[in-house]
Image 1 (cartoon, rainbow, N blue to C red):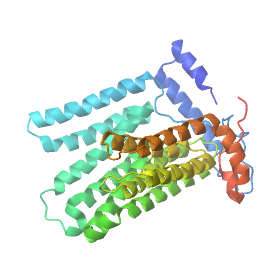
Image 2 (image 1 turned 90 degrees about the horizontal axis):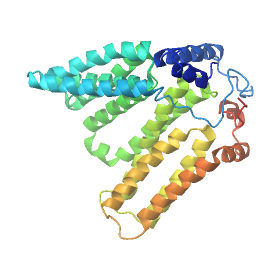
Image 3 (image 1 turned 60 degrees about the vertical axis):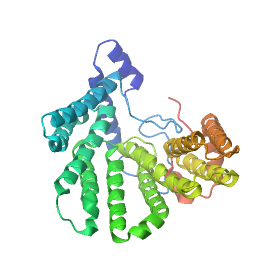
Image 4 (image 1 turned 30 degrees about the vertical axis):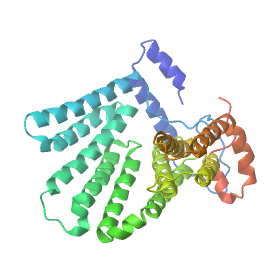
Length: 362
């Protein structure tokens, strides 16, 4: 495969532009994906010999291929704001969703399908799905819908998920599958709230936890079908891991803190124990995304509780300090910890479907 450094050097020299570099890299990845599209057999050893030299601990995340991604992303944001402002000024506020829907699809044809710009593609996918949900919500707002549809929220969440599926079918943006899952979870929560509103409030934490574990299982399945992380499956799994982590951690925080905002030593120890367990899982599957998403949510939640002075002791600051130490320790010793942990675990036949421990020299 063409080295990324060579492509960027060619861009710097003016031989090719950034869009052409992205398309060349995409073509090379697709060629390697075609060569390695057959999942490895359970008895085969998964090493870094096939396809390309990889770093087993390098969790590649394609968000920005160049500053042009940022430039286009700013343009997309300005366009969304301009459309919203114009629709309100001219008195067609309800038409904003339809216009944004069409605009997001048309821009995706250019920036997602033709130019393959990562960040604009993600923003346009979110814009397309949100516009579809908003449009359906507007169309059903004045209708007398059955109570099972929970005031049209079921339709809106289904439109969000359906739009993500349509976008994925056409443009294959990795974030699309996470958007599909998010819309599906929205449909489930709306249905449960309509059928059993009291029970939905009482059992919202277990429901969210089950949803998070289900999304994690889907992400893990995609990862195991692409242990060398050469195809779009790996990128899609990245976003699913981000979604799953938040869904798993949120119920724990909500259950521990509660409505009174109580947070003490016991809660701190439970939080640290949870993230130690998540750290082990992240090491085994070699997914920092799972841990980073969970820790980001936890850090923000703990910092918010500190700002609200919900506890007079040192439990909150010490919990935040423990999380910081955990992150830094894992960052410094990720490779060594994986090398020590994986052989000690009874993974059996699943070991060959995990990313390799050792990196192949480039």
